[in-house]
Amino acid sequence: MFEKNLNISLLLDFYGDILTERQKDMLDFYYNDDLSLAEIADNYDISRQGVRSVLKKGENILINMEEKLHLAERFSSVQEKSSKIASELEEISRHINNEEISAKIIALIEQIKELAD
Picture 1 (tube, helix red, strand yellow):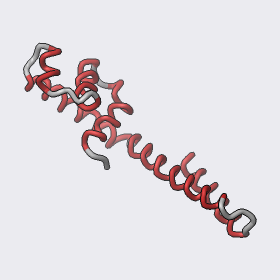
Picture 2 (tube, helix red, strand yellow; picture 1 turned 180 degrees about the vertical axis):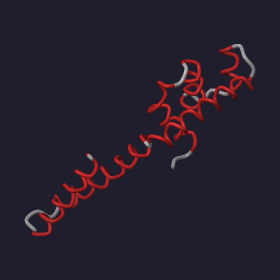
Picture 3 (tube, helix red, strand yellow; picture 1 turned 90 degrees about the horizontal axis):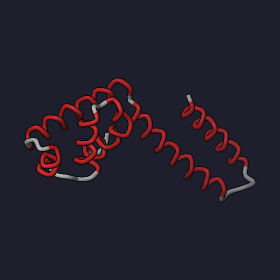
């Protein structure tokens, strides 16, 4: 799907609220703020292994939620399709007054409807 760090960061955006505050904060520090295990451990006065354990548990929760709900995957798909639609509309705008335009517009409208479902 994505590079692991981007993936966990994205999953944290979608499902972070189901984690404990501690899990959420540590994952945020590690993946978004790029703090090391040692830095996080110092902030929480625990061992690096303790931090790693909290991170792994949080990661597993996020991954399991994504496997069940696929929200991040669907979001990425919508983003990709929206980008494609925008590109097509740009192309259409360059070729006004053509019968082909009507067909492309109808096809794009159908794609947009698919995204809404």
